[in-house]
Amino acid sequence: MTARAKALASIAIAFSLSLSGCQAVKQGAADLIASTGKVSQEDARSIVKTAEVLRSTFADITEEEEYYIGRATAALILAKYKPFRNEALNAYVNTMGTALSYHSDRPETYAGYHFLVLDTDEVNAMAAPGGFVFVTRGLVKRCGDEETLAAILAHEIGHVAARHGLQSIQKSRLIDAFKVIGGEASQRLDSERLTKLTGIFEGVLGDVVGTLVERGYDRKFEYEADKLGLTFAVRTGYAPGGLAEFLVGMEERKPSGPAAGWFKTHPSPADRLARVKTETAALGAAPAKLDVRTARFAQAVKILR
Image (cartoon, rainbow, N blue to C red; front, side, top):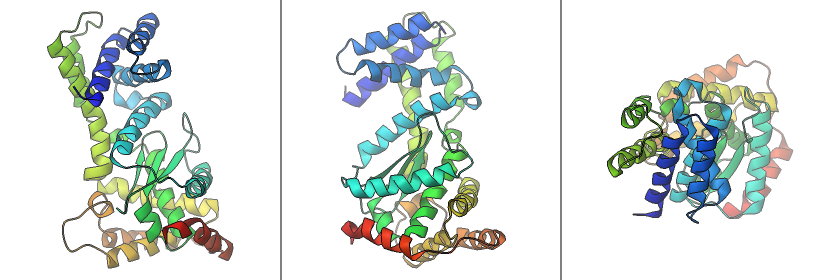
């Protein structure tokens, strides 16, 4: 069994115990997992917290529960992409992202927003539930100025604000989980039931990761994130033309072969551009682009040039 499979098995065990609703049992599950020596007590508690999400309908997920789903999703994303090891660039992106999130419709999440540059030439950006936002080195390199990067970050914050990531989880998985347990949370799980529960929880995370990395959101979610992102960027003081400029650039560089990265997970730039231009015009008076921001951006990303 791989390390990942063992972790998922532990999650399934904790999940089955947490359904009892008894705090003592939940703590016992955390102690049991931590006692293996494979994970810390803190991580064991996190596993239990994540497992508790499946005790109710997805519409009732709390901000704390959303955080644990997002953290598990972020871990799987980081298993696929390495973080870009440049403290200055990551600090710059986090400063921008924090300012944008503060001016969003959801300025606070359970554990705050977190922004990270991924070390890949692939052009992409994604946001896990709870406020974990990733942009690739390749995407940052494609941005011409701070307004453009701000528009991308604001778009991803829009996904978090509207909880689009949670809506990618198949509600049928919750029903399947209760069928496996049969309403008897205290019963002993045999290997077959444990295998099924492990698969169900893996599916929950797979739904989210698959949406972010492979399939992309439904068009209506992307259009909503565009609109929200424009609003958040302008509230923060950015000129609203950054997103349109980025989309024009991406349309010009559209691959002739199979779609990958951003082109695979987002609607075509042309489909979004007309809407974005209309929504930008509807904003009316808006902040102007500032030279100081352009200079700041050039300094921050010079390592990529």
